[in-house]
Length: 84
Image (cartoon, rainbow, N blue to C red; front, side, top):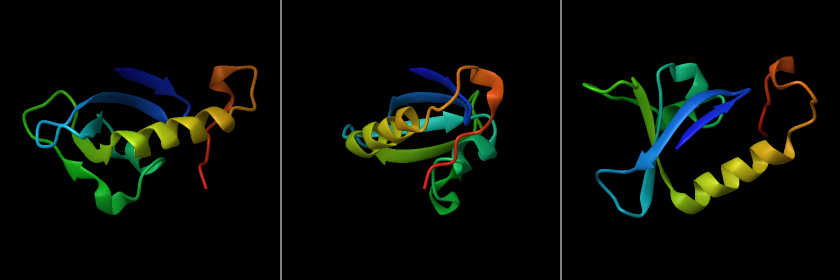
C-alpha cells in the first residue's frame, strides 16, 4: 500500500519478521517521525525505502483513523497534520 499524505509518502507492507505486524517504510526519516516516536524508526539497508517502523496492524489502523480525523483542509497541499 502506498500512502501519500500531508505527513509524507509511506509504503506499507507485511513485516518480513512478524506476520501480525506491518512494516511502514519511507525514503525520508522525517515522514515517519511525524507519525511515530523516533526511537521506533530504524534504517533499512538494500531497499528503495531508507527507514522503517514495525507496527501491529491495529495500531497502524488507529494511526490512519487519527490522520483521517485531522483532515481539515479542502486543498491537499495546504499544510502538515500534527497528531497528538
